[in-house]
Length: 99
Image 1: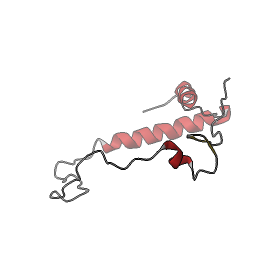
Image 2: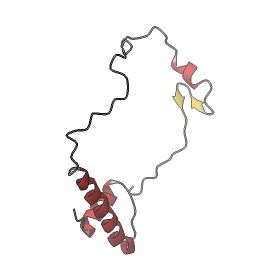
Image 3: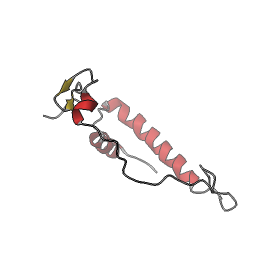
């Protein structure tokens, strides 16, 4: 699947990524290669393959019940490096590029 320059710009905008103009063609080629590879997976004949099993079939899961253990919000933040009453204080990790 071929991705053009406009599509790369649109994806970059959605992902809030900055891609230099001279790198757009390279990124378009790389994204197209990734999508082409993913498309080849649809061509695999998996008719004789058993589904993957992550746990034995006779494994019983635990009951999904609400526990009785509770704590106050202040208990959770009491060991935090920084807190404000019942909230964790964390440094900003994302800048708003378009105020």
